[in-house]
Length: 623
Image 1 (cartoon, rainbow, N blue to C red):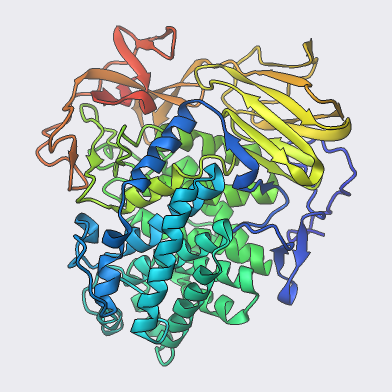
Image 2 (cartoon, rainbow, N blue to C red):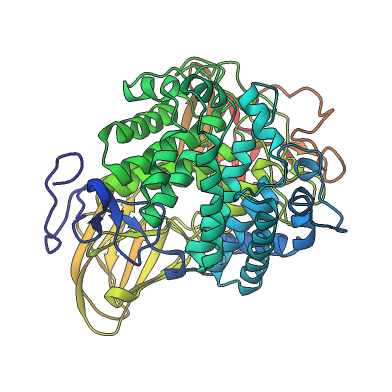
């Protein structure tokens, strides 16, 4: 039986349903009945439909691969001595390096979150996904130097800021999120261990975790709950991941120390009490709950994760697949009227929503989670990086604004870090597998090698410019296998699938997976037609405003040239100071489709939001 009581299908069964999954072949039982990955399947996720390891999926030439390469160049531009500067000073080790600025300035209380955290995760992902050995070696050097800092600090402590920040947290004094930064550092170390095999990184991370355990000794529950009102990132998730890797019970116990009943209990009871909360403070807490479900089997955690994700995607998201205004949930569920602004859709939130969607999809194989993932991928991740690899913080949705990027030397926002991670791991959810089936989740030019089954796929597509994809089978000998292809919820009439030129009678229902079970031969070709059409997505709570969609893409009306350089285009602040008032939303009209993803909405030029570069734009139109 699965954890929710449904009967597992035998791994030899032919699966045909949209949500049918076979989990028995990939799940094992750990301590206290917990569900854990079998040996050798290192992933911070456990489910019946597991993502393939990034080393098994290579990106092929196309927009996504180009964006990933740009990000790698950005990461390679960073200097390890400069990244290590504040860590060394905190440990009493001399440093003559010029520190980076912005949120990594030596007097910023969030210093270390990017330099020691996001950076390590991003270079680990770049190695796993693209084989970038140069970045891996930089990561190895960082880990070795951080280990020296930890040894100099004593007691397992490692951060770029002194322990005094943690004392202020206990004392109830003003402080900027020391556990948030610690989470990033621990996560970076675990990613170096899991994705590059750096054993020292795990040792350093366990040293930090021991300090966290000691920190809470003697702290009352009431004091701890008060402390947890200060953003702490995904401390519950990273400690749960550490338990999953080591099976040391103390790390699971420590993870529970970061649970907040005042936030989690309403979600467990399927109540939305999110109004007024800071969005990206809380999404990681739900990811932690998802991971706890996977490791303990406690159904309450699954309820929290699935209810939260269902709720925010339907009641609190903009058409782009992201949410928040001024980083907060400011309105009641289902009512985003009056919320369009310069500070919509913090990019970190999209990153964390996509992480959560990977978990919920792994449990059920439901296409809706990969539909949502796709919406965020193309509208909230692609297009949020400029040609120099600099990242956005917000995605303004009020008409008349433009894309604004952090500077190379003096920003290092949270969204710089999550962006660097996301662009380093675009291949992590293109394909999944159960015991015997391959699941094609995203339409991205790529190549899959399932060495354990001696089965591979080459996906040739220029999606979304191309309305479909082609899959070419790679096998040394004929073999029976099921290939499951997502049929998106947005697909229009006329979709089709052909195998070796023969069109199949069945296409599949929109919002499900089509299962193709057959004996495959090398070179077999599956051609999938996924026609797109224009449709509208009203602003929740305000039917007078609507977004224009084309397949999964949000269309942005072009309102003229925006700034191309200078402080209104690239700067140190998280919003372009002095940007001026927004324009009036344009009047909606019929969508005319041109070539090369060029459109007109009425008489106004429009293009996919991810292809907006220097223009002022509008996402919502007057209905």
